[in-house]
Image (cartoon, rainbow, N blue to C red; front, side, top):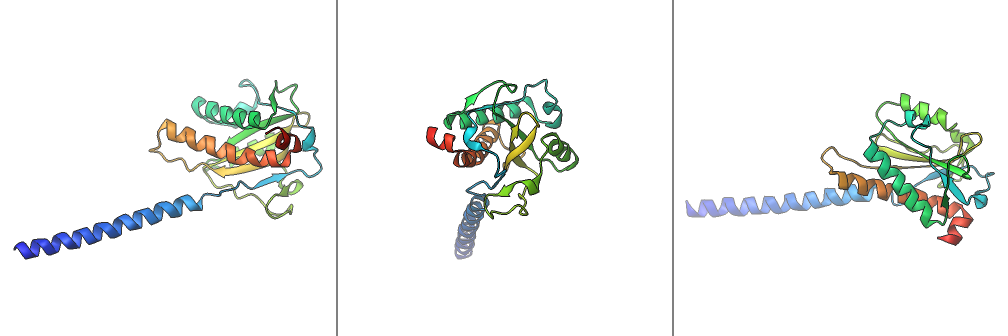
Length: 204
């Protein structure tokens, strides 16, 4: 009986070690699957060097109707945008006076509201160049659960720059974990705006 118990113990220990190794491997794989650099599309004829200020639409703007997110999520995204743009040396102004407007959208399973948002920012994928391929035809991969950020020309409300990044938010995530993922995604995306904008590069 004692020998049999020892054998079962060693078999269980061996199985537990394999399970731990498998869990660690899956965790590393999941982390490595996250894009390290956000891919963007931008308007090549837009003079990003002239961008010195940015704005966010007010809560009473129709933009709020396009984006169905909680106040907590909205605050987290906007604070992250402000932090990233401020780090680039850009000044936050009222949306009526800013050089560009920064908008955002959290992609859901339904594509209908996303289409409404795209119409609201006059998004034209073929009008913009993919930063990875250098072509207009290449679209951004935007699966559900991604955060989209657009930089919009105020006069025509037309997007001249877009980036997306998977948030990877899970139901069991705490508010702190959700906020950390939002902060990381926004920073990863707007870092690319800084690389396109010579003024932001110089000021950062």
